[in-house]
Image (cartoon, rainbow, N blue to C red; front, side):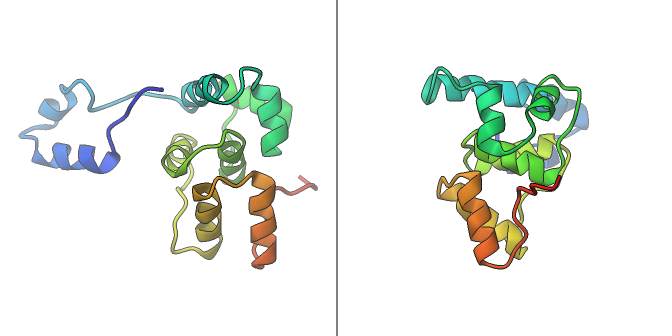
Length: 151
């Protein structure tokens, strides 16, 4: 997986630059990456680290996201909503940083610990829980689960 600088570090470097061009000229300042590219990188990493047979189909089953929709997202044809993006993060076994990056690239808000539901989800991500286990925690604590079987 490609290492990226933290956004906070980049903001500090941008604000300290004499001109915007000086910042943009730095090799690692701006990375034009699509959600599809990032998801494909994560999938390849998971295949190498966890299971050589891990694929989009298994991701769909693990995440609870419709398989056709998963394929369309990976091909750059569709963008997931926030809950679907979070569900994909669970299916890909993302850590907190990867989850937040996935959400940003999906164009949705990151998980924010000042929101009750988001705090529960963040805690579940941090503790390596599955999407199903996270939904159980959300339900137990009176919050709407990620997976909606009616959708």
